[in-house]
Amino acid sequence: MLNNITLGQYFPGDSFIHRLDPRTKILLTIMFLVCVFLSRGFLGFGLIVAFIFLCARVAKIQLKFLFRGLKPIAIIVIITFLLNLFMTPGDDLLWKWGILSVSVQGIKNALFMAFRLILLVTGTQLLTLTTSPIRLTDGLESLFSPLSRIGFPAHELAMMMSIALRFIPTLIEETQKITRAQKARGADFESGSLIKRAKALLPLLVPLFVSAFRRADELAMAMEARCYRGGKGRTKMNPLKYAKSDLVAFLCLAALVVLIVLTNKSGIGVI
Image (cartoon, rainbow, N blue to C red):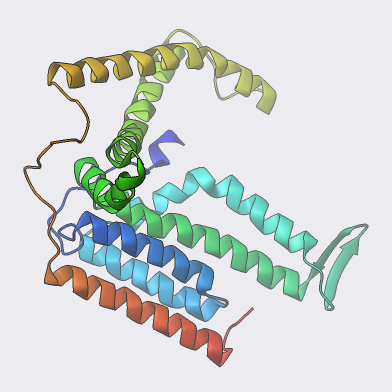
């Protein structure tokens, strides 16, 4: 399961999407989330799926690697599907038992909500997969910089977010090492009931927390040794600059927004 977590991982490349300004990709990700919530039917979702496939193709990211990040949220998707399936009222009842019922509208709504959740996770993965942590930090800091005039800690917040994203794959790797070490000593994490397996995971928490605090302390000492004092007066080796490719990317996503609005107005495939 831990191998399937792709959040925070960076897929190096030199594609059109990789070369986009990080500020552009952050804003485009926000626009993409708006598109997903704006769509009110499966036709709009089809356009969004085509857009995700196109972006993955351009970025040269394999779809199996992109969809691998969906496995950790499979339980959430299933719960969302079941709640909408049994709790959505409708006139065309197919099955009823007590307060639970299944209707045609419930099936449509359950599929719609589950598919929306899948699109949200799959699409937003493209941001971290195509943007290095350093570039992501610079982009967030630049976007938050206007708020620094009112005392908002733009640089510090951007740094914390990027470090948190960067440490996700590191902690996953550390968890895997500890798990293998525990198994080599006879620990059993796979047999027994769910409660028993959950209790078996408790011995992993202590060494994992110790390792996390140790890495955080090492990072703090490394930053202090390099005279890190925050963002004030700092310069960048590669300053952020908008290019024509950023305008092209904005126009492409704007076209997607227009198409989704048109599909909503047409009423085709609307739930």
